[in-house]
Amino acid sequence: QVQLVESGGGLVQPGGSLGLSCAASGSIFRIIAMGWYRQRPGAQREVVAVTTSGGSTNYADSVKGRFTISRDNAMNTVYLEMNSLKSEDTAVYFCNVRAYSSYTSWDEYWGQGTQVTVSS
Image 1: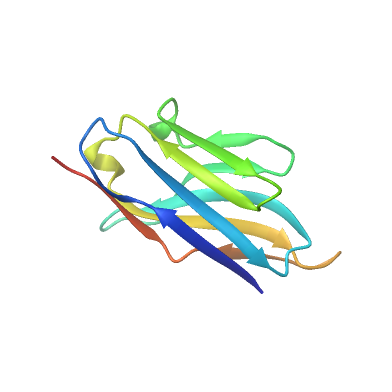
Image 2: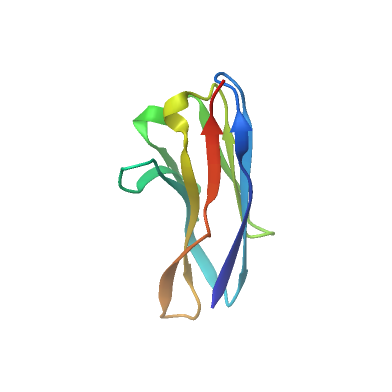
């Protein structure tokens, strides 16, 4: 099993910045990708940013230029730096990890979610 522990989040004013982190531990043989998703009130969960083991990153159009995803491979930790926050960024943010637990078996794991509220 793989455990994900998220930290960060909270309340910030519009235009402010906030950071999230997610540490993965447990039966990890090799990580395929790490990323962040969010779920706004009344909406479906959507991808925010993803980084793969090959080093590529992808962002939702709505956060490009404002959010930065990064990764510490040695610590199996993924970060999300959020700048120029807007009220529409208010959501519960979930860490997502896809990882092999053996040579042939991989699975997808989710963090518990952390609330980000952008409000004056």
